[in-house]
Image (cartoon, rainbow, N blue to C red; front, side):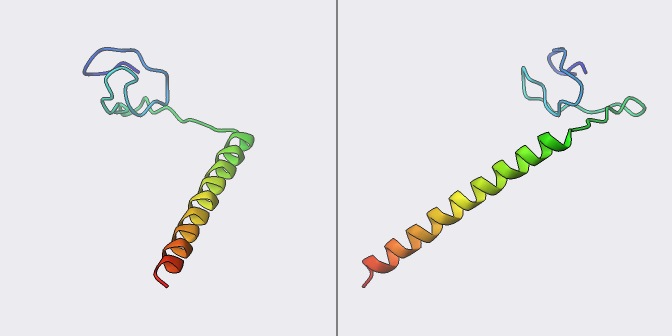
Length: 71
């Protein structure tokens, strides 16, 4: 898909231009359906769950540290 702003050719399925960051609009009738494999989706889900657990642990640890410092 060609960027309407800078003219850079972008791969199918891109949402924003890789050169200038302009949002790419899909033209009616030329919609590109991106299909992800189950393995790719599970990899992303696992990574997201891992990040969620890390952030949750950090928030809990910060809460405990703040709670203990207020005693």
